[in-house]
Length: 516
Image (cartoon, rainbow, N blue to C red; front, side, top):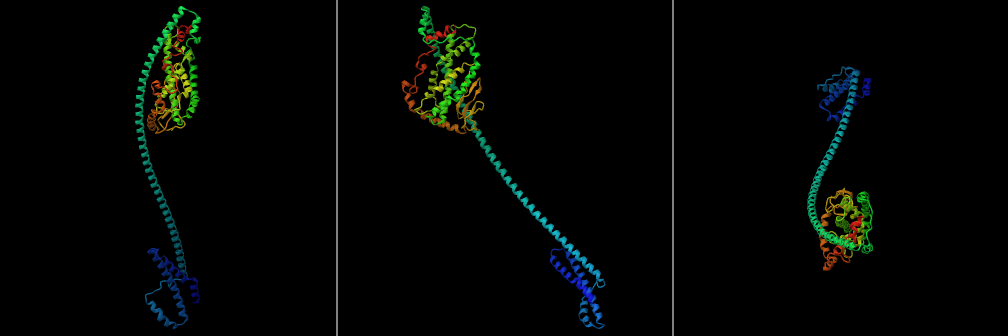
């Protein structure tokens, strides 16, 4: 009996039963119904094993006491308990079998707990990954919403910018149409004015030619009566030098003179123009007014030189047509004569004409102490170059320029203070040189956005204020109409004949003696 009791204690069956009960109690609410039933059955089986061992010990103890020992105890305690329908199902199993079953059940329970904990850990990991994925999905949705908002904002701004650009284009088109209409009107007026001036000049030239022919006739009559070379020399104290050259000299030297004049035009832009600009800046602080003055001087110089060239050519043609009979055409002979006798060009008369035109030009203004005669050296060089350019075949001229015209990259280059995105020209700094409507030397212009309309409003107020300047009020007297102060009138305006072509000496030299 003692050995059986010792084996029962060593197997720790009671402790294992207690642990199973506690484990079942902890996992009762987590387990399913089948799991709880299995746990209960296992505990019942283990309990029945322990009870079977206890009954075995009880039997051995009763045998050791004899036939009648322990009868009262069995009657008072065991039998009533057995009467409660308790029966041992494992009393007949051997002890070793029940012990092996207990160990197997314990091992299964341990494996079951490990499997459950592994599954729980996997579930927790899956839940963490699911939460992380949900968080990333939320962030992606937020980024998508922000991108959609940015796209809508960009669309709104693009639509606004497009509308503003369309409005600006409409305004520019309207301004372009208005400027084109003004330019066409100005060109028509200029053409009419040029026609009137040409008609007046033609009449004056015809009068001068008639006078020259009269002088030629008188000189011939005088020489026929007294053909003394001394008398001829006394009447011509400064005769023109006789130059011997082959016919067609103007065409033979055309390329060389063309290159020289183009280089001289560029040299005037880089030297004389800057000298005149620096001189004017000492009296005028506004650089725009200074550059406008120089540009107007260049334009008027070319105009005056071309008018003088036409008059000179007409007088030479009229004079030579009376006696010329050579192998060359009359036009080539006239051109050769002009090329050889460019020193007969009255450049001072052209300078005076340019200064007179600048004084009545409404686009430029100057303080009372400034006189345009200050830049007479620049005007003189421009007139000489422009006159010589008319002797080329084909002749060179400057391009027409108007404030507010579209900027042409092939015609002008922008000044350093221009807005390089502005489409319109505010004012010109230097004209472009052209040959048969082809640009050979670029000019310079200033382009700025939004400055043309403000310039027009300021120009109107400036022209009103200039009408009350002391110069014009002083020159409005009857004796000095349209003439600036302290300026000598030109020979044409004063009515005096030109010193070279309107005297008898010049007429004689334009006659047969010029080609002997």
